[in-house]
Amino acid sequence: MTAENARAGSAVPDASAVAAALQVARRAPSLHNSQPWRLIFDGKRLHLYSDPDRLLPMADPDGRQQVISCGALLHHIRTAFAANGWHTEVVRLPDPARPRYLAALAFRPWPDPPERIRNQARIIGRRYSDRLPMDAPDGWDALLPGVTEVARACEITLDDLPDSVRDRLAAASDQAAALRRYDKPYQSELRWWTGHFDISEGIPPTALATTAEAGRVPVRRDFPLAPGTTRRTTAEDRARLLSLSSSGDTPAQWLRTGEALSAVLLECTGAGLSTCPLTHITELPAARRVIAALIPGHLRPQVVVRVGSAPEPDPVPPTPRLPIEDILTITAE
Image (cartoon, rainbow, N blue to C red):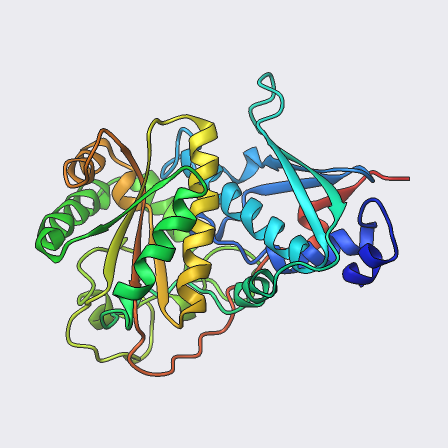
């Protein structure tokens, strides 16, 4: 539908084309699957806003991770529109007086996008956060330059952290968990967003690890544990740990971090690898300082990503998403 709309010579996608692209793009990752975004289509441009009602005040009091989540959606949106024949031009943070107004997208037809972009849009539906133990990623040395480049294109630095620092990262992860363990408001917020069936937000039990599985992933957020039997018997997690860092700590750089995160996750998923973004380890200043000391330059770590190979086919039900009508408002006449 959307590609036909572009080929017909329309200057902008119609409302149905916008909804079709967002049906794909809404699969973007977000903190606790909170989906903290709202979009308005005025008939000419698509406007992206963060949603104040979906801010997680205990895990994310300054809204940094919310903006990163919206940046991931922004990259997913651009990918979905490109695959359907629309080039998007983005103005990021277009109005300083409205900090929740994160991006405005204008359109022009792009009837023959590269096949690589079409493939990326198809990959969106395959990506999920794999919280189970992983094997080392197959073909990683060949893939790393491309993964690094897609992050750099978003003005974000990607560092592949060496195995020699794994214990230090695990200690920082444990420290972050210990500081949160008796934080009742944080724990209450975490439980609210995890472990529920039949809702369109949050993390369902099928996406959580069991006690045995979680114990073999040293760098992880401590979620409520999943019921049931162990699904993956990998002896030890051997996923690579990547750091996505920016030169500063501004909303504009948080947004770009989210775009880079989306690009990296899709690149890895397209290569047949499993991924899991980790943000708990950058929520607290002490843990962020640990990561900053492990990477060159004076950079601000924003997200850590686990990348590995699932040792056996592990079909996971898609994590639920909010209906399109809950995230998109159409004001065009």
